[in-house]
Amino acid sequence: MSTPRAPRSVGRDYLEAIAWAVGITLLLRTFVIQAFRIPSESMCNTLLVGDFLFVSKVDYGPKIPFTHIRLPGFHAPRRGEVIVFQWPEDPTKDFIKRCIATGGQTVEVRHKQVYVDGVRLVEPYAKHDLRSEEPAGYTPRDNYKAPTVAPGELFMMGDNRDNSNDSRFWGTVPLDLVKGRALFIYFSTAGTTWWNGLFHVRFDRLMKVIR
Image 1 (cartoon, one colour):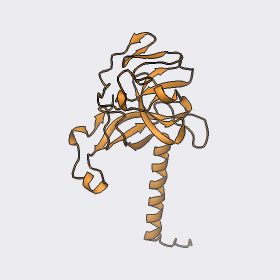
Image 2 (cartoon, one colour):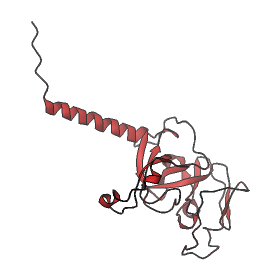
Image 3 (tube, helix red, strand yellow):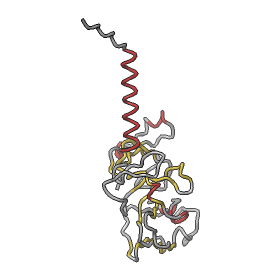
């Protein structure tokens, strides 16, 4: 005759459920998708301060934590995509910019217009702010010629061209520092704190695909 099992405690069930939820969340955040918040104006008007967005890690392949190993992805970063990456000068900080050129391509900025391999880009997303503190014609903001982008590197620029700290100032981004591709905005607020942010929701930006 078998001995009946002791009933499971409700507390243990809750703890196991929480542990599973935390584990699944960490796996998703590490290998599939991660949430980010926009803190600066460098990507205006594509992304605004207070936008909350999801970033796909599977497009380019997620990295195994604490290693330089990247799992297979769907494709390599492509020109025109908005990408989150670790800032080369301080990898503890995450930046988000638009990929302007990939390995083997040459970037030149002539009077604010961007050329890749000698061809002028059509950039409806680019914004030029005449209120910038720097004078017209400032180099390297307005006039810049970069060496050919090395293999395994990306040349990144913010859409708010006159107010963006990007590859024009500190060089290219190694693919090893890339976190993922920006997908869509899931929440957006003009509020400056979490509590008043709930009263300043930008409903027109919710679920907006990032292009």
